[in-house]
Length: 220
Image (cartoon, rainbow, N blue to C red; front, side, top):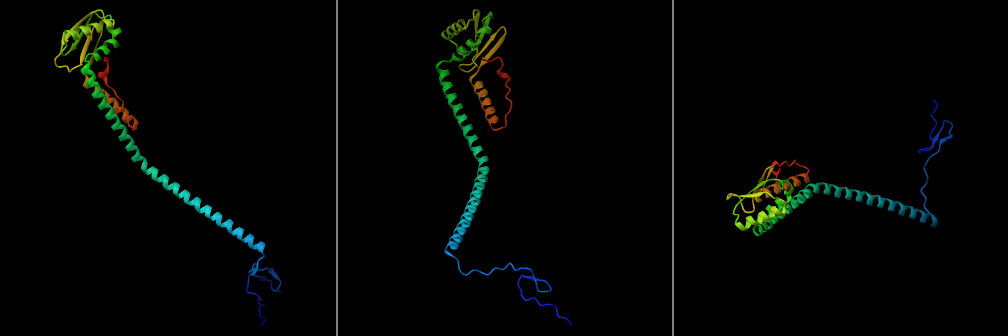
C-alpha cells in the first residue's frame, strides 16, 4: 500500500504532491530588537494613533453633548413660550389698568375732553347740519357755553340743542345730527380696548380671531 505524502510543516505553507511550495506562509517571526530610528518611528506612530483616537472620542462626546442640548432646548421651548406669553399678557393687563387710572383722572379734570375731540373729528360732517343734539348728564350753564364754543370752533354754525340724560356716566355723551350719530361711554371704550387687546394676544399666540365690532361704526 502506498502511503500519502506527508506535510513537513503545520503552518499555512502549501505544498504540492511533489513537495514544491505552492503558497508560502505569511507568518513572520517576532523581532526581538529594534534600531533607535525604528523605535522613534513606532513611538511616533503610536502617538499619532492615540491622538486620532482621542480626537475621535472628543468629537463623539461633543456631538452627544450638542444633541443633549438640542433635546433640552426642544423640551424647554413650550415652557418658555408659555412664560413669554404670560409675561406679555400681564404687561398688557398692567398697561390697561394704568390707562384706566390715568383716563379716570383726566376725565375728572376735563369731562368735556372726549366731546371736544369728537367735535373736532366730526367737524366736516356736522358743519352743514342745521341742528346738533347733544345728550349728556349734569351739564351746567358754563359747560353748555363751553360746548357751544367748541362747536363753533369745529365749524358748526347751526343750533346746538342740549338734552340732559341723568343715566349717562360722567364724560359720556351722545351726538345726533341730520346725517349721523356718535356716542362715547368710558366703560364701553375700555371694553373695546379689552377686545382689541385680547385679539392681538390671540394673534401672537397663533390663534387669531377676527375682531368685528359693529358698535364702533359711527363713533368718534
